[in-house]
Length: 357
Image 1 (cartoon, rainbow, N blue to C red):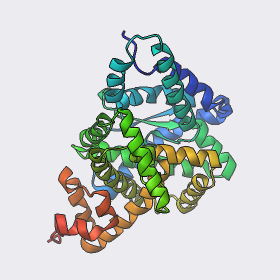
Image 2 (cartoon, rainbow, N blue to C red):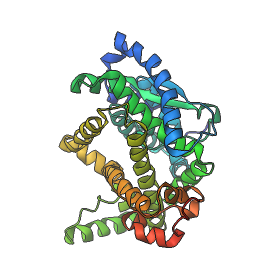
Image 3 (tube, rainbow, N blue to C red):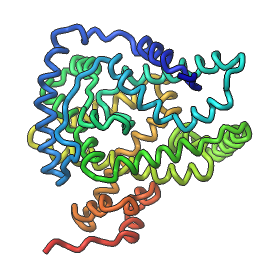
Image 4 (spheres, rainbow, N blue to C red):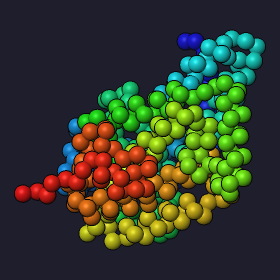
């Protein structure tokens, strides 16, 4: 196999080391997770279907509890696919020169460090909305990162069964979005592919991005506020795609939160506390972690929960749940980021749904 621009083997090894040890994976508590999540994932599927009317076209979900190393291995393939449009072009530039092995190892170490950091914090597969499309036989699997879940239960004295049900609702809701809306997965991956394919590796693009950042700072604005480095270094074409991706992700995150609240209202009395603790966990992160969150766009993602929820509240106030269903009818009906901030603009574009007879 020809060498690639990223040494993925090194990336995996660095990620596993960076993720650190997870003592809970060797405890009897870890063994209880598999049975719990097998049961709770099935329950969550029924609850989400009742709350949304969506039914997964990929069949019933299978729960899989991973340790951090297993989560890393499962997501290496996603990152390879995600970055392929860029790495393919870089392969041609890097070639087989004297510095090629150094460049590949450096890239592998950087990707590995990022994956390792993520592996120590994520709770499930859809925390980052990074999805894989090349293994259809595995699309029924919902991954849970056991050691991270157990660590939170212990630290905050969460009732284990209830907290696990809350996490299962989050994961299953997002899975239902991608497998219950026939065009969603392909559309989402198409947007991401378009974004990554448009990456400009010309050094002039770097100069232009730095100039834009300086202009933002002079204007008293944070240049990383809207999507991290991805937004900062984007071209005009990419910024248009970011507008669409940002709108879609805000809608999915807001819809996920609203669905969780409705589906688990009677069975998860601590749901508000769970949400508050996890938000505080993100907000109270160390300065270094906050920098990383900004760089990779996670801080912008946190805002999407609130913006998406406000959009859904406004839309349902105008036309009830049927109005929100208009968004799932066709990709052209999805709101842009501007429309997420201005729901009236979206309502004017797609029209208000007729009330049910």
